[in-house]
Image 1 (cartoon, rainbow, N blue to C red):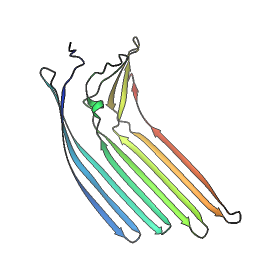
Image 2: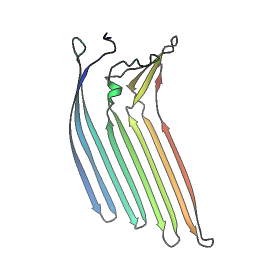
Image 3: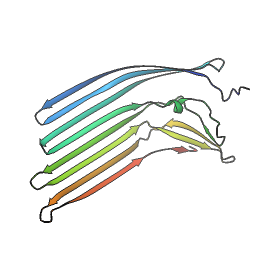
Length: 211
């Protein structure tokens, strides 16, 4: 017997158009380029099992800006900077409003009204090496944050213990960072290489439980 609560038949159509533009500048020790890809996406989702049929239309503009700058002080010393941005669309699982009761204590359902999130990532790198003294310094750092992120939202019934899982957008950004500094040098009198490495990392992620 068909259970109208759990059965669905979706026709899912997606149309995407993309284009891009970039600018490159090279002069002496300086190299710089930036650009972006821009795309429009349209989604049309129809549930043919509903009477009348349910129709959900969504349209978004996706863009992926990027920039890179490098400056070489010498053949063995340079500074590099990169930026990447990207639109992240919700997945089919996250937006599909289909109840999944495989596990009655953990029921999942999508949120068809989710909006895209946007991720930004910055990378900075510096390296220097002195050939005569065989001394090297390396620095690498990255920081990223996601605006309007899609996070899990769990509602638990205190009496039955059953939980319903879905997804929402939140106005608080998620973020992460990594930093690494490495210094090494040749000690000629002892004929050994010595070095020290310092690193740090962190991240912030959000989720909701019973609001």
